[in-house]
Amino acid sequence: MRDATPGDAAACAAVYAPYVLDSSTTFELVPPTVPEMAGRIAAAQARHAWLVLERADVVVGYAYGGPFKARPAYRWACEVSVYLAPDQRGAGGGRALYTALLDRLTGRGYRTAAAGMTQPNEASAALHRALGFTTVGTFRRVGWKHGRWHDVTWAQCDLGAHHDPPEEPR
Image (cartoon, rainbow, N blue to C red; front, side, top):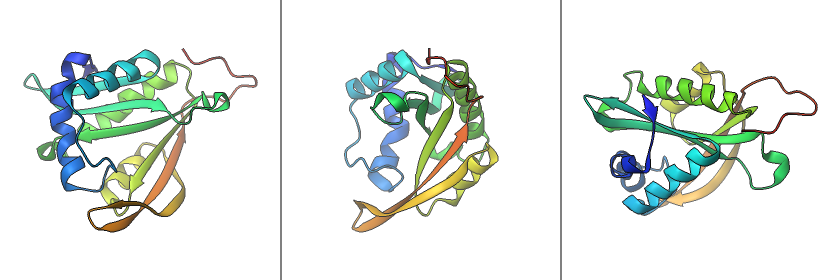
């Protein structure tokens, strides 16, 4: 596992494309191009984090954090996601990526991580529960993809102590 660079964009785009095209896990409808993915990696690395998991020198998954909301009062919260190549699911890569990502975000001063999961997705829900996330609510029928409406359940976890006033994220 290591920090991603824009040079990992093609591999990350390849991991992500099946989620965009064949599932409702993400509500994107068109897979991002390699330059778009490189921009996403650079943006995440600037303020949050983006990690890749390699096996035999091949990127087989990634996890990243980004802003939860744009307004300043939300700056201690972040949204997190993890994606694995289809043949890597269930092998512990998601847990390893998320554990490292959450540690990195905690170290940067973030205090809350939030994750949205399109329903149904018991594997993702189980992963999040195992890492300390608690369900906070479900938005009903908020996304239309593949000919039907989808619900999204949100979960969150504390990343560190909530001091008053908090130190700025780094």
